Length: 323
Ligand code: ATP
Ligand code: MG
Image (cartoon, rainbow, N blue to C red; front, side, top):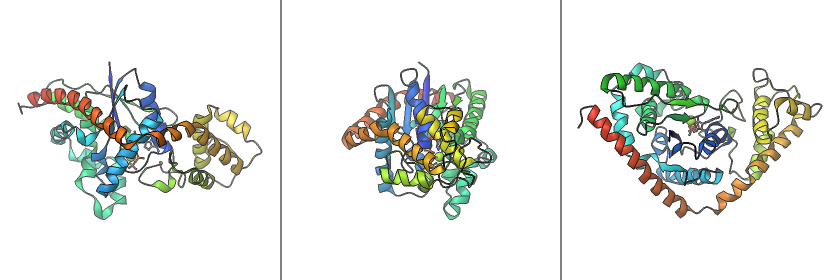
């Protein structure tokens, strides 16, 4: 069976962008691929964080994933830090990567701008760890949101470099980016992507209902009062339309017809109702999952992930002269 690796950082709680950009694809691929889904706790350390909060968020994200439909019988759900082989390969790849390539990464530039006084080398090196995450499983496919495209290109480049130098050990992983929902925009700034680390603009899936309604009704739009899909001129409304389209399975044209001669308030109210309707069961399911059950799942997941990763690591150590 072909393999998938992907992950999510416990840097905040799961939002609609995470679901539409990556999680729904993973769920769709279950049973068709061998899936490794990691809670990327090492990646979460690249920006300022509190240990207590990291522990809490790690468990919360794992629980949310299961509530959303990640099936632990079909998907290996694990914590990145539970599989040390990732870090071993990270070092090896870090010695191959060009420092200039890392400085060109968009996310590095953004984070550097955001955390001026607090930029550790981890932010610069993070795409190398991401390459190691993927390659330690020799994954065939990596489902991610559009923001990760550049990092995937770097991974592919690292495979070429590694294979040229040490023999053809790795496959070049394919990136899988959903066509319409790969970049859900922030509700407070529709020119920026929705990001866990900026919770004000996030539509958090398990947030209380009152906040969800408030956030949708307050979403930044424009002054035209016409529900029309035009991402260039109307990024806020178009973003809400993309969300509504996925939740209701209607086309953009149908949505435009539905809200012809109606105001933004009515449209936003419909988005809120569609959201609650779509996630109702999943939100209920999360309440029923216990911490101890999730902790057991993560331990079991780590066992399975370690087995595959360590087998590959042996080959890597031999090929690179360390064994
Ligand atoms: P952070 O702000 O800490 O980087 P994040 O919201 O970007 O958090 P990640 O954990 O970095 O979330 O990413 C998890 C997955 O969700 C990745 O595959 C990423 O591409 C995808 N993703 C993140 N934000 C969006 C978005 N706004 N639209 C679509 N996909 C997204
Ligand atoms: Mg991110």
